Length: 371
Image 1 (tube, rainbow, N blue to C red):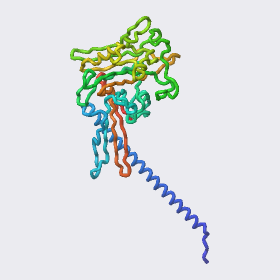
Image 2 (image 1 turned 45 degrees about the vertical axis):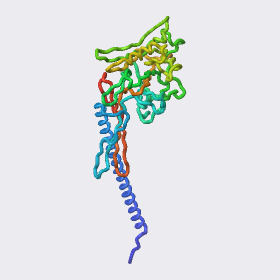
Image 3 (image 1 turned 180 degrees about the vertical axis):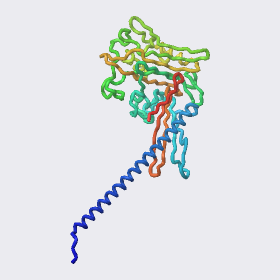
Image 4 (image 1 turned 30 degrees about the vertical axis):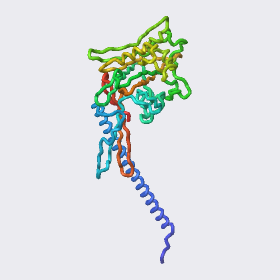
């Protein structure tokens, strides 16, 4: 006699087979995801290696002065796996001189190079997308104990130098801007509606009382017979500084910005400028820098502890250099941007790589990687 098997056996077998298929499908999908992840990692690594290689070629060209600042050197190498198309390739651009701010479009050359200022945090700025000149991305920091050296000549990339004394440079003026940072840490020009640190509250910004010099500066020119320099003129009248002759950078002039009423630029504390002949101190600086030299640079450092009017510490000052000339002066720090590409078939992977190099020969050359 035949026995009828219960229907649940068939159902149980179907459920088991379904579970096996789901597990197998999940395992296959997981394997595919892992393969895709590893492919992405490999492609990104290849793009990064291409960017690093391109940046290294840029460093070599910078050292050999065989570059044109700000011009992209396209496809400096091309690695192929099969066929004639590049599987991996790279470009680089060297920014080695002061640069016009495309946002302002005012014809001036700015240092730091727009978008590279260290008064803003890494990742906040872009060298290719300029913000207004007063944004912190376009200013550098200087704190007590820091010193800064800034060249005052143009290098055409072949080793030919032009100085302010040369007609080819078309030098008109040089301005140093200095300001305090925003109290709330904002990077915006207007501090997002709050204030900058108040470094001095004397009613007369020219007074010598409770109004010390903050920055010591020096212009240094090299000639065939040695070095010459010009230092701050501390011309003082009766308990006040002589406004037309004094060239000190002191608290009051940083706080009050007195030259904004006569110049097209605000926050100027020092200049090489002869158009306003009444400012004899600045005309003297202009006369100095337009003398013939074989090397010329500006140096400054903070010599006074920084505190606001309430006694709180000001962590640093911000500075920017603006040059009115036909040719751009050399930047203290060159930025070499390597761009790497890797063709993975369905997608092309891209990686930017930035290297900074000190352009001045007064300190040891260092390379710092920002990626």
